[in-house]
Length: 328
Ligand code: CP
Image (cartoon, rainbow, N blue to C red; front, side, top):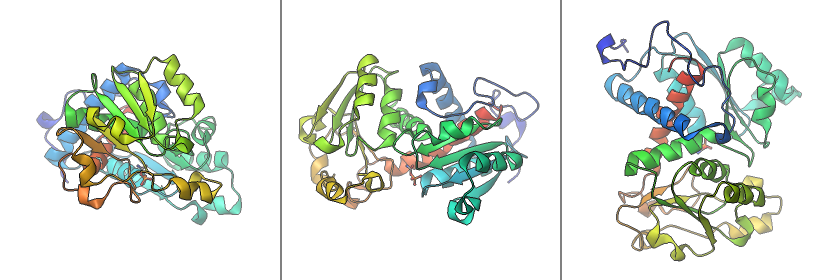
């Protein structure tokens, strides 16, 4: 697609020689590294990316730059939205979506694998099954690495897009009651989003089976951060007051005891009947994939935001790529 005329470009998204900025060459490993001002800045850039995509589709902000997309775990949204983000910014992508077809299957270590990809690319996106893998890999790199999910640890770009979704759908974050439902123990998106919410004036309601409650280390962090939260087993206790209902999948792949998984996998299912008890303006979110915890009968309800949420993710990832490569 043709480059847009200069007059259409936001003045602070330079296509020319100007570069750097607060995230230039920085790794994105955890939401703990952000301030509220950082988050608001990312959202400003993401909104501009949305405008540009709607106006021109693809533009050359990252022309000549290469992203290595390295996924040790399956992904549909994160892998493809980072690819789409890079390509809409005019860059290109090395996709390694199945490490078993790479030299990882011959026993190559994570440090050697990322140092190899660094030779061919300007930024690496890494998803890994082990908590802390992104931080470990980053120690070996001179170029920026973005954590696309590390085990049951964090998923910082998902948390940013979740929060961006709330802001775009409701217009504000402060003052809201946000309910998170499902697998709060292993759901890394819940962990990252909870940490981000500490920066805002919100109330959080956690709803889960006893087995899948928020881990103790996160509970202590949230208490220390003065996030007002409460824990429940019954969604009905908090549904009516919720402005956002954030549903998560029970993470089968993290269980060692399948009997335990079976005992909790169908603990909650959101149906049209559930939504009759919710606010008319509530926003229903899910990081996806879903495996039954939101009925497809709910999809047509205007409150169901999970498909829009995926699209917001591309704009946030465009913003992050531009930022770490010094173009925003
Ligand atoms: N939300 C999310 O991380 O989805 P994928 O596993 O498909 O990337």
